Image (cartoon, rainbow, N blue to C red):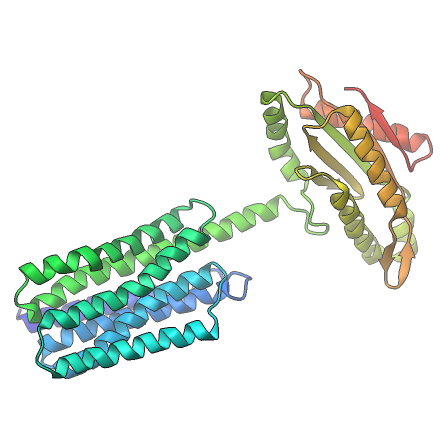
Length: 386
């Protein structure tokens, strides 16, 4: 097989990889965020542009040097910017009109200079250096974006960081070696470019898909622990996290208290105004509680109109004071539903957890105090020393 046939084969292999990547991108779950939902689209643009860029690098060896010179700079540079745009959308960010204009100007001017260098008598490495330095700019922007936007060390973000960093090192450190040791660039370039572009494309797509899937998985995991109606934590969260919170406080010699609460006569609200109105009352009631809790306290909807507040680093006296503040806040709140103002009261039970007690011992004692509050006339706070 001749060198020309080898190059055709490599173009076809890379094209097949691009087609598989594009097809697979359509099967990925779509994030609900408007900008994040656009990231697979820019990943597809990257795949197409990088294939056109590789084709352009091969054209001189296929006896189309002028066409290659015209296409190589805009296609490679656009592909690098598509990496940046994919990551930008992946993190829910957008470009300003000025930034778009600057990027367009960069691609246009670099292309003009590259084609001009093609027509004048100049060393071959000068055009190659222009291509490398121009391509490094969007990669630097992408690297900076990953570093500044990544809040957790997910495998996908690590892979994206490694991929972009490696591509920069290849451009900055690998090209001088290439210029020194490779003389017949016309036929050697397609082989070296294929290896570099193939690995870059594969690693970037793996990193992007991994990062996207991990984010969606984390979102789903979060939704498992959030009450869909009120936005507070739910019973699943309590069973998984509450024992760990108690253990943390014990390790640091901190008190831990619980406040159980229940809306008084909530059945009357549902019967009088309907269940949709009752749902709205629950949402606003939960909001009143949350805005009056301390930072670090956790409100959990245990079911129906029953809520539980976890109060780390809070002893019984301070928990009782906090519960009275919550009781007063509910009493003063004006719950508006369909132009109707509904006044609520709630009953509260407070308990602290001593050494040897489990979190379930604490919730049992808080419930006992809550039952006492209801039996004593409701709209009040009772406490039990654990």
